[in-house]
Amino acid sequence: MTEDDLNPIESILLEEGEKESKLIENRKLLDPTYIVDEDRIVGRDEQLNKVARALRVILEGDRAANLFLYGPSGTGKSLITKAVCRNLKNLSEDNGIRLGTVEMNCRNLKTLDTAVHEMGEETAKEAGTDYDVPRRGYSTEYKYDKLFELVEENFDSLIYIFNELDMLSGRSDKDEPAFSRLLYTLSRLEETRSLSTNVTTIAISNDTRLMDQIDSRAESTFSPEEIHFDDYDANQLRSILDRRRDAFREGVLSESTLPLAAALAAQDHGDARKAIDLLRISGDMAELDNEQEVTEEHVKRAQKKIEESRVLEVIRGLSPQKKYSLYSTAKVASMAENRTARSVEGYRVYQHMMDEIDADKRIKETYTNKLKELSTYSLLNWERNSEGPSSGAFLEFKFETDLDAIVETLEQEEWYNRLDESRLRQTIRESFTR
Image (cartoon, rainbow, N blue to C red; front, side):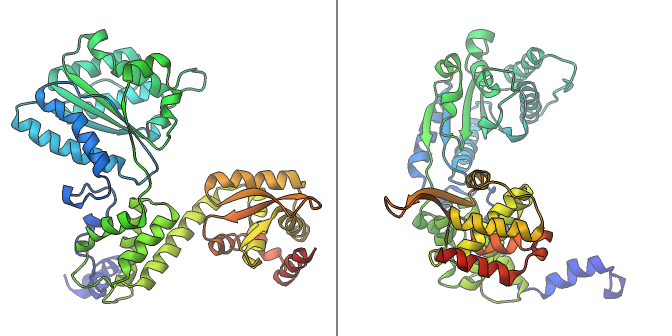
């Protein structure tokens, strides 16, 4: 195919790719979901040891204890589980043990019936066979029966891994959440169904209170070993990124690239997935710029891009009144020396804004409640302060997310064009002196 034979899209896909500087050689290492080799797993020795020791009895033909892995996102819960299970399957084959591992994400499983059907399909896939039960028209109990027939016929041991188990809440008219009923059933298979297959359940959740929500009977039978995963610190994130530096061509990472990426990730979230994403986006930017090195500047730009994307996604889903309340407060904070905003100043600016854009004005209590709700999005936090006995108490809002990104994102809204920027800034300056 010659250059003249290419259509415009093909030209972009082929020609532009050739012109870009190729800095990334192994993109798999920059995919947070990719299960890396054991020598690349760092900062989780204690947790890895606990998971491996709990599951190793499977190699002796016994049932392993159930596990509950909990902690913030991106702290290695799934990574450790998958790595241990991968090695366990290899060793089980050598020992003649038919071990299966079925991993499920519960985020989109709304009911127990849906979850059981999904388990049937995934278990059949692991066994290399078919699950011929329709999604509708059969009871949950029937689906359980067919599922456990599959389990009994195909496995000596089976590990179910449920990511974000707390999301499987079920119907609102049920007193007991769906995940509680599921755990109860899976923990009593030997007793209630005379199942000879050893079934182990690994529950993974960001919610540290998951065990408080399950029924007392389920808690008694599930009875897991609990393993906590805390945030990675900057040094651990640096080690994680360092063990993925060979994703890039040798010598293209500047000396300060990895330390800065690790520091920014630790400062904002301690999430290894986001640290790896930050490094990947930095590399992409350097390639698009046709640079020969990934520098500190690329990391800073990547961080800003990630922050803006997250802020944009959150803000787009807000109601108009939340947007007005957020913008007035963020604008005040952006002009304050300490980059915070008091409720009294923010509300004055909010009132000015509502008059200018001819929008319905809410009372101060509603304004502050809207902002308090926004703390659940990790955009800001608040605390009650006072300047002394003679002055009234006030709320002070501090922004957890890039303040400038919030302001810039909201200034893309249609209503912002109806504001007079100079009068708005004058109103803010006057609010500081009252």
